[in-house]
Structure formats: structure tokens, C-alpha cells
Amino acid sequence: MSALVILGGGCGAPVDTTIDITHDPCAPLRVHAPAASPEQAAAITAATALWRDRGAPGIGLDAPGSIELVFATGNGAVRGHYDDEVGLIYINDRLPAAMLPIVIAHELGHAFGLEHEDDGVDSLMVRGNTTITPTERDEANLALLWGTCQ
Ligand SMILES: [Zn+2]
Image (tube, rainbow, N blue to C red):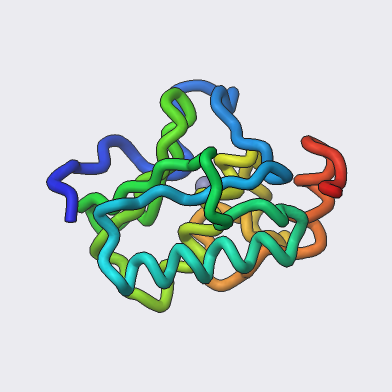
């Protein structure tokens, strides 16, 4: 567990409106979280599997490129946050384990450059979502940004 504290409002309180650092979902990329517990590591594996089925075939593979992910203690309102200025995902280590795969997948969506979707839309990227896995719409949005991965 990290002693870091998640600052600010977490997901949805960006410093600016641009996602500065993004990661190519077509490239082989591992999610690098060396301090993750076995349970947290399993949640990361589950999250990457969700995206591999929805247009990001390279995520979660054992590869030289990586997205850094840190579990940190935040207040209850903050589930996760993608710090796009440095390209780092934070996940609140107080979240129930059952919630982790979707929260991690949501932050990976931001790391791929996806913005929030409006409430009620069938999308992983609805703010605060803990139930919707990546959808056809998310896959299409990813393809708009990056093209369809080969
Ligand atoms: Zn978000």
C-alpha cells in the first residue's frame, strides 16, 4: 500500500480540459503496479481483459511499454484518477474489491484519451461508473482516436 494521498476531486476534476499524456491502446502495454497486492493485481488483470475485448488488444500484455498504476489512500468520494500531466493512474485502495476492475478500466479509458460521457449513456466512461464494462460505444470512441487496431 502506498502512503500517497489522492489530492483534489479525483476523476473529473482536471487541471485543464486536455488529456495531455495518452497511451496507444493498440500498442503492447503492461500495467505496471509493483506495489499491488495479489487481489489488486487480479483486478488489474480483469480490467485489462475487459479492454482487450473492446478495441485495445495490447493492454495488459507483458511488454516493455507500460502504464503506471498506484493504489493510494483517498477519501471515500474518490474512486480513481488519471493524472494526465504525468501519465499515472491512481486507484483508491479503500474501494471494495468487486468495484476495482471497472474503476481501473475507466481510468485506463482516460489513459487512452477517452473523456467522460454524459449520465445515462451506455459507456464505461460515465463519471462515477462502477457497473458498466467497456461497451460498443467505448470501442467506437477508441477507434475514432486511434483507428482500429490490427
Ligand atoms: Zn473518469
